[in-house]
Image 1 (tube, helix red, strand yellow):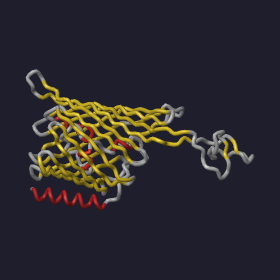
Image 2: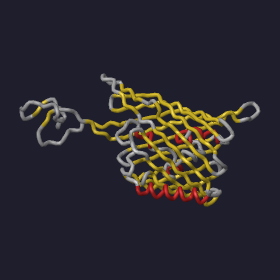
Image 3: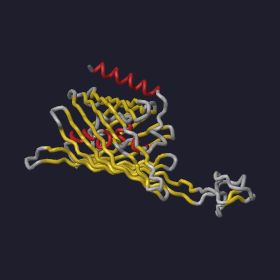
Image 4: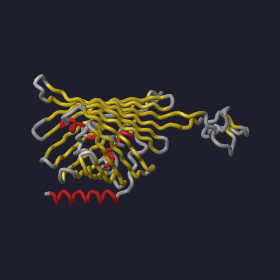
Length: 326
């Protein structure tokens, strides 16, 4: 069985490495929701659906929260290329009855993504050469006029801010099966307008054996960002379906692979490995649909500090995160 899983993992990693570079739903509503959270999972190529054993499971697979044996908080910050800033924090709390029996786990999480320094331009209200406007000319001066051959006038800069706040509940459904759900509130502010939406995530995690788990998630269900514009425009956030498997080759090495399908896009393969060299130090490697990922962790008492690197289409991405158990 060990040889079978190792072979499957190596095949998955090889195929993923040969795949084309990913674009993370670029240009679609809520694209940041597909980027993932926690440097630990990201260092494994985002193959975390069936691993999901820390508080970041609220994002990857809420069912995994039910396997926590201690309360835990996680934090992540990333300054990405093209003036993008990405943050995440959450807290997972165990529910127990008066006899101390676990009744489930709840969590509260918040994600924020922003693009700063977006230039504000305007259409011209007149031309300096006396010709009539066609309606497509940009303003090239502070008075809103268009002069042929001149550069577009920048009136100022603004920020695109997107946020996702969600509550999670997870519990053990049977001896080997766990289930979880997220209720989400999304918002976006762009220039003078804003949009919002409610949505759901569902997750299942099955312990096939002591060493092998299988996970399934449906994320971003029913999310339509309704804008406060005169037209009442709405942007649909595509639903993501992910099937994952994780296998502990031994006490120190975990292998994982995910099949990820975003609505109206081709299926992607994520694969990764986590190796705990010592009880306090780990290394990771992965393939995010062809993009190399690397990671490392260091434990200090109840704290774990994680780092990940990803070779992405828009440039190298470095992420730092931390978690603490209570």
